[in-house]
Image (cartoon, rainbow, N blue to C red; front, side):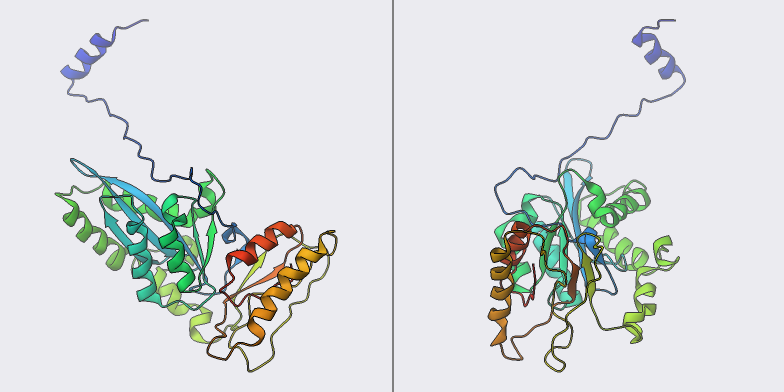
Length: 314
């Protein structure tokens, strides 16, 4: 039976029915840029405590007359929101403000991995300089793959479903106050997470073994590919470091370009052999296997983090 759209509209009008308009989609990730894109380390990490991996993202929120944008940073281990910022622009200053709040709140040790999408805001020079200043390792998702940043995407879905879509906001400042209450008083302190054993992020952090002193002080491990050979983890001399350096234990002996691997490893070691104790800041991460990690990837990884005390055998 064919029905004219005018008849449908008339029947709906008589029954006081309204057609639901689809929400406007706003693109917040501009990955078409010439800035440097970093290796994806987050999906290869096995976390053992807080401040080892932070995940960041940006989303939009629609007000009555405008779109505003929210930048958030979560600790991937506890799902806790450690930094956020709200503004009417997508400029780099938005995620930078969220990052500065997270750093001031958590004071992370060197070697923390910061994971985000490939957006121009996170690849910008100002943002990367802050990461370098605090000895953080940048990591970026694969193109058009939100699963690499699933925990942050899940938080944004929860925020919109439980707060944004259930409320009406007068202006940007009204929204800012409500998001602050939702994040600080509800999400971090009260909302239960099945991935955390039905505990809130703050409760999970308080009860985590690494916080109670019963866990090993070693940092997260990064496995690039499963190795059939048994790998051994080299450790620095006792007394010189408080935590192990970021290091790899399985050289890619099958690759022919061994000279590049040697230069990559020796360059990192020679840079830090003469360092003083004050200079020898310690990374919280270590790489336990690099089988399948090409020499070119290794060289790029080392080149990205020349300011970090990275001990690598590529």
